[in-house]
Image (cartoon, rainbow, N blue to C red):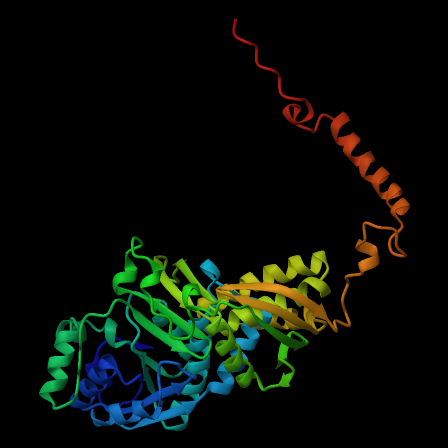
Length: 426
């Protein structure tokens, strides 16, 4: 059930998902003031913009609430690996970084809330975006008996706090630090997979994406002047080593982020289609996902036949939409991922790529035991591969069908005849 007013929360234990920012502190303090039992929860997703995740606990303590921080970095890395394996990008080549973070966050926080006797989850998503739907759907499927409260859809709370100035004034009145600062050019959401920049100045599509100051990546003009070569090893579509060093999934993502970031790859722009039907403008950073995903694609090209590739592409698009829509745990998504894992279990190999000022170049592919590529078959020169004479029979079979279509009058006349010449003017 969705609770629509904070006044209905009295007597319940509410778990508030917090980041330690202005919104989190305002909502938590207002609920405490209304006599609600509040316990704050925050997920450690390897956020690059959070130097010390424990600072969230310190900031929230000023509001009179304790904060439980759940370390989900390893789970986040596994989520990244799943998305790379599925090649699940959304509009504009966006690597679904926020979507990954939401299913990892909800799975970890809901479990922790249940263990602490929480019966209402409160999230800070606005009533205009995707995250409200993601948080609530994941709560509903993971803990169907847990209620949900969305503060920024509560009419009374919105009337009391229509903007950041009113929130800051309220907190300062209670002796809680609330520095609003100058108006930001855009807002940022971060996790191990990448950064999403949107809102404020970025809402205008006349505003260049170059106003974003990359936090994980680098604009090409600021990248090194020499190409960096990187070698990645994959086993069953999972990266297990970078530059010859065996790494855990978390270590792989961190190293890929560092390499991809300094070479400027993984920066993208999109006017994406939101869950609720509107469009949203965003600028995204996902350097590690781009490095891993593009490199794995080269292995897929070697091991997947034409029909397998077509099926994979369909499943990839489906999984991308499911993640974006907050449906990671749905049976459809799980079935699609099982099929993807089965299709790509042969995707093992070593890839060498070159990275230069935002570009990624293929350099070498080897150690691919299940490759379908045979140099002799593809050669244009004399070789021991496919005998070119063997194609004669196949060409004749194709000719039978082509002629039948033409003689049966099923080929458009305009296509079958050359265009008429225009008469010259006298």
